[in-house]
Length: 278
Ligand code: SIN
Image (cartoon, rainbow, N blue to C red; front, side):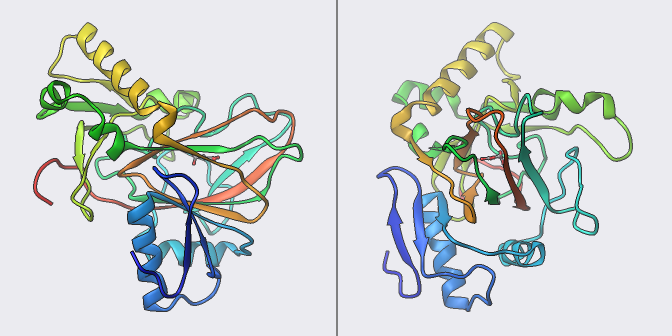
């Protein structure tokens, strides 16, 4: 793919590229916007360094890609900006968001297409990297009999599995969606097929007996988690990662306690997963 307004440097052969030559806080022309979009489709997750983004600029960049998503049960600490999800860890943290392999909010009927995370503080001695896995490649590297078995199967994605620590907050401000999606997901833009089950949210394949469902899910999760399908992003302050939740999973490493890591995420709405002709 030829790019005229950005420079795209892959960070692994399988997934992930750094994008250079863009100020995300500025006005993006249509061509540059289109090239960033194409780089995301080609690389599944793209990274930007040395960005300075106000909350408004961060939201405006996300809105170029679609409506912004409101998380069903995460706190909304920034007044007037409920679309901003705060990603924060410090000496009091026992867990961090996204510690399990997942795609964001797959428990929604229409899960987000993508997420844009901007970190301004990172641990001083390294750590806090984010891992990303290519779920097209995960599908493509299954054996043919397993691919055939998965056609027509669905899986349940349950918010309570991922967000059980919020369970005592079943009130008007928090709700805990559950959705059923095909295990093989066709990407609505590229038309490619990816595996769409994740350890963070997926609980059950309803067409199978419980023991069968547990075994098949565990096999698929482990397969997605093989290192050859992944890249690992090392954050610096003011880096941005933009991932496509329809074809990539991610996993935030929590290896830096008691240090601080802080940033904001905006999440772009998506559409209902399907399998078949795009
Ligand atoms: C997330 O959005 O799942 C968190 C990712 C991270 O903190 O690296």
